[in-house]
Amino acid sequence: KMLRLLIPILLVAGARGCGTPFYFPHTRVVNGEDAVPYSWPWQISLQYERDGAFYHTCGGTLIAPTWVMTAAHCISTSRTYEVVLGEYDRSIEEGSEQRIPVNPEDIFVHPRWNSICVACGNDIALLKLSQSAELNDAVQLGCLPPAGEILPNDYPCYITGWGRLSTGGSLPEKLQQALLPVVDYAHCTQSDWWGSIAIRGSMVCAGGDIRSGCNGDSGGPLNCQASDGRWQVHGIASFVSSLGCNTLKKPTVFTRVSAFDDWIAEVMQSHGT
Image 1: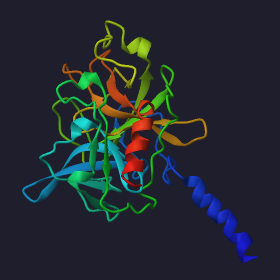
Image 2: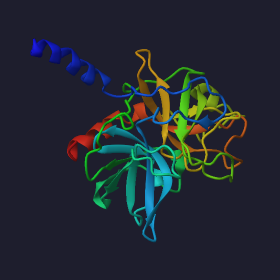
Image 3: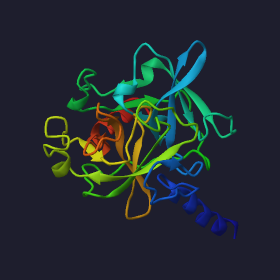
Image 4: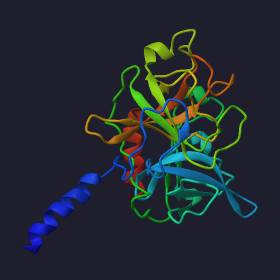
């Protein structure tokens, strides 16, 4: 009897896997708004040390209990980093936060990343945490999309982060989310949009209107719901227009995660999951 009871419970625990929050996000939001607390439980805050305190610099995604995915441009070799999981309101200690240091030798920036050419692509980095994250209702893994998958134009995705609420504006205390529909390669490379020089096939564009990423969202996820209901992280926030965060026809540009699955797997396998 006991065994029979155990089996279904174990199946349910295993089925959660990744991309399934305990607290469901409000979807259909157009302009940015406060997210439902812990509804994007794979979102992390990447923080750097200055004068003995840690400060938010970028977002990121927990993709395994000891691995975080972020943007290469978020990383500076001179800085000391920690990852904060289970964060929602940065102004208060909520008790759900897990602060895990990252050792400098456990930061892996894509070998083809070039810091003076963001538009050249490869804006991706992996951080191995110095201890394993404890998964709970506030901390879960994000799913990676299938290799090579490209979403169609207008596919509804959500950007999340603690980035500036407007160009040059302040950083919010609470995690923000905004609906950013995908702008496909054919549209994004049109001459009056980004054009073909800035956008590569290994990128994904989203938004391009009144909604966008902004400074501080960098490295954070573009969350898109798959047909099975799970959320997959299709993008890593990479860059916005120098004309301003929400410039018309200049969508937020993300590193397309499905273009880097081989590299992600190789780094994680060779450095131990």
